[in-house]
Image (tube, rainbow, N blue to C red):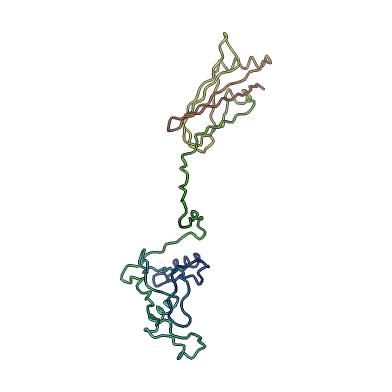
Length: 265
C-alpha cells in the first residue's frame, strides 16, 4: 500500500487526488460500542480509516458517524451532483435493501478537506520501516526502558610478534584503534641496557577518530639503532616494550603494554 501511495504522490495526479484508506475487517478485536441500527443489514464493529490528500486537514480527527457508505456518498456528491445509486432504479443486480448513503446520521467526508488551502507537498514514508516499540495492554505496568549511557571507552593495540629493524629502518609499527575520539601517546624502552639503564624509544603523540584503525610508529634513535644492530649481530635477544596510552574527551584513560621481538636480517 505504501508503494502505491508513493507512486501516486510522485505522479502529476497528486494535486487532484484523494485517497481513502480503510480496513474491511475489524480483526476480531473487542469493541465496547454497539453498532447503530440503520437498516436490515446494520453496521458492524468499528474499523480505522485514513484520508490522504494534498487538501486533507492536517491532524484532523473526524468524530462523525461514518461507514463505508460514506465513501460512495462522497463520490456521488462529487460526480453525480448528489444523486444516489438506488437499488430500486439503477437497473443492475443490487441486493442492498436501501440506499445506505442516505442512512440517518451518516456523516460527510467533505469535512475532512480544506479545498481553500494550498496543496501540500507529498510526504514519502519508508516502504519497510523499522518496527516500533511493543504495545502495552490497558492496566499493565509500563516498565521504562533502561537508561543506556555512552559505550565504555576502549583501546585496542595490535603489533607483530617480531619486527625486522633493517627492513623497517628503525621504525616499529603499531595498529591502534579507539571506539571514541582520543588523544594517543606511546613510549617505551628496549630490553637492551647501557650502564644498567634501559635504552629508550622515541615517543609519539597523535589524535585519532573513534572507530578507525590507524598505524602509529615508534622510532629508535640513530645511536640506539646502532647498538641494537650490534647486539642482534652478536646473537643477543632484544625486544621492545611499548606502552600506549589513550585519553578520551572526558579525561578517561586507557593503557595497553605490548612487546615486540626485534631482528636484523
